[in-house]
Amino acid sequence: MNLFILTIGTLLSNSASCPPTDTIILRAGNDSKVIFYGKSKNDLKKLELLDLNKILRELNKTQDHSDSLIRQQVTLNNNEFVKEHQKPTKMERYIENTFLNLQIGTGYHANRYTFFQPAPSRLGHPAASLTSDIVMENLMTSNLSVFHDMKFVDRPKFAFALRYGVGLGLNIQRYLHWNLLQSVPVDDVAVIATRARELLKTEEITPLQSDFNAFQSYFQVSPKIAVKNKKGISTFYMDFGVRLNYNRNFENVNPSAYAAGLMINSPYGATATTDGPVITGGGYGAYSKKQTVGISYLAEIGYKWIGIFVVYYPDNIQLTTNLLSETDRPDSGFVKDKKGNLGYVSFGIKIGR
Image 1 (cartoon, rainbow, N blue to C red):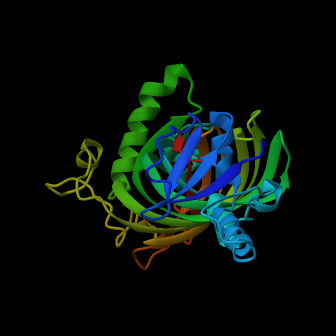
Image 2 (cartoon, rainbow, N blue to C red):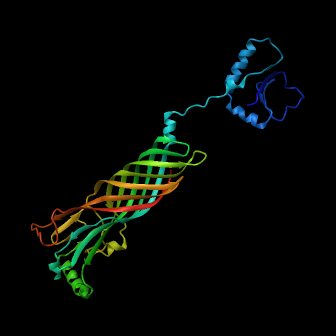
Image 3 (tube, rainbow, N blue to C red):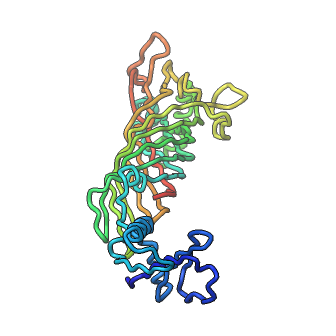
């Protein structure tokens, strides 16, 4: 850094001389000026590194110990007045590594719950398999989250951190009811399919719930690795982790066409009230819960502020088959007190770091 000359001029306001081009003149009073002179514009920009308050205190101290003159020039060693870079506080470092993220996507069912599975003999075929199943479809998933990256390794080319935080979201879900006939030779399909429909009618298999929503909150922990560019800015990143989810399920106020097509005696179609059974038949009913707690697994990959995500919910909804009448029929194809989980895989776009 070139040496700067600081000149305090007194009674110079009427001076006719023009200042050099690379000069900053600061009025210190009606008849006084402070002049900063450098050989180039770059020299003047380096003034930002100087502690000007300290310089002025030193000038005043020097003036107090010198003879009183109308005009005096003082030269100082600017190395003594360069500002030290202040280290960020713990709170500033914490905020610097805290990020807001938005995820929007959809999903697909991951497993199923079999409510009714009669023995092949009830279909009059040695190998035929009839099941009345329920799966859960994820029509839309969305959530907003706040994460903090606790860095363990921070190198010029990469960084490794433990990401943790919380999120809130809204998911639009649906129970899909499937009746599946399998393991039937082509020549016997027509006959066995007719018997299967008659058996479903006899047992009064009736889907009752379809569309519902879920408010979701979660706590997430996921190790994260990021690659840095030449400027030290994180670019590509990847993380894998787990979430502890809490879901609050409630009825969808606008059921889909699928809901209206279900077999129930209602002019409004099927809805997911979560109070009654999801499906009934043969004196049994499968029930879900309004509130669920479970673990999910996620993976994210992206570049700077945009990426993609995949989340696997293995047990988002738990179903239990309860007896609706006083008579249990163990050989009917229904299982009293049977429990099972419905899950799904969600995927989509992530916006944020």
